[in-house]
Length: 270
Ligand SMILES: Nc1ncnc2c1ncn2[C@@H]1O[C@H](COP(=O)(O)OP(=O)(O)OP(=O)(O)O)[C@@H](O)[C@H]1O
Ligand SMILES: [Mg+2]
Image (tube, rainbow, N blue to C red):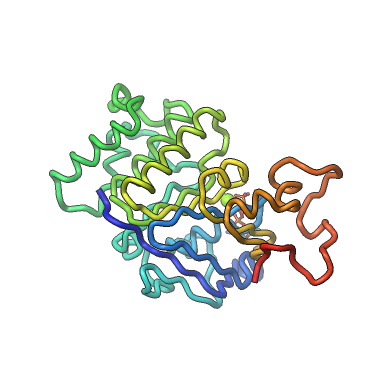
């Protein structure tokens, strides 16, 4: 079980895929033990942000052009992904990315690949089965045959097997029934509170994320457009209109809404 959380500090991050700028001067701060969310519509740059932190941009022909990413006060730009894992970061990737032909047990154990304490790995497996009792009878089942909700539990469980100090979840809610998603978010809150694990959730489901996170950032077209505490963002009319299903006329983006004089809204980006 991890003790304490790892802080993440991103400043001025600009990421490109060839000629396409996917992130532009982005800043994000996750304090140690914090629970932070990044909200944004399709194409906002959310997954690119995750790839930047986990040093997996190269798999997608992307690169950091400018900016800094610090984990626990140490710069990690240019480090290899095993070093990021060793620093205490685990991710639940977009689309779960389980090994469909391996069993649930094998998938979970993959998450412990960086560990050498064999006794501790058994203990973590047991802890996972206490968090997700539905998985116990499915341990020998092939992961590809599970329901979407069960697969997402395996994906979260796999990430927890490395005893992360910072857990990053990319679109945990995608394609899942509301009841299952709510349960998963409750579990994240429990993990955050009981273990002190820092949590960064990347979400399109803003109401869910703002219910559980302490603070959040709104990304649009690769830029941070708003940030604040969850309560501030829940009360922000633009967030309500764009991400919480409120408002009258439909807008497709923040940019389509007339800005108040003086630029960004209250609680907006710096
Ligand atoms: N491998 C790539 N090559 C070129 N452009 C890319 C690549 N991956 C992402 N992009 C572009 O970068 C931008 C951000 O994409 P990203 O996948 O980070 O967004 P996202 O917020 O995660 O979207 P979604 O909600 O659909 O998952 C988009 O314009 C996308 O087309
Ligand atoms: Mg994405």
